[in-house]
Length: 133
Image (cartoon, rainbow, N blue to C red; front, top):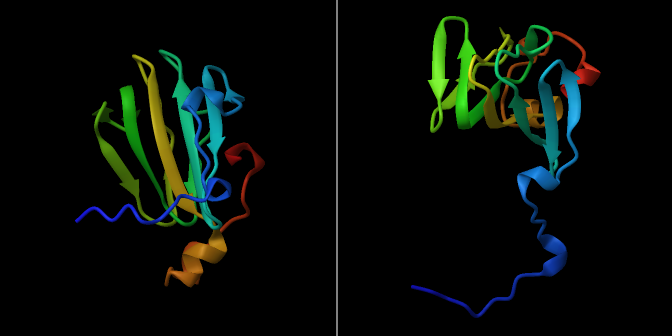
């Protein structure tokens, strides 16, 4: 059933192309673009040039998930191509790299949102690093 009797409030909607979000260089060949979202949820796009590695080991207190839009990302020995969804558990660490270049869109919860959703306080082990945006 299509009920079109409602109107979209233009003040409640944000729309942009991914490339309209400002790119922040986080390392050689690595940029991150923060995207608008609801409170408690961080959403971003990462672009990595061919041969690039994330500048440090990334630690995610509340976990992290991403979807590979194009290219291929390598995590350890595992390779994830376009169309792959990857999810890391709370308190996980990883350092992505790529040989081909990659664009991915990711998200995670802020600490208060994670705890409110039932996440364990034991997973909250370090301070948020400014390079993570």
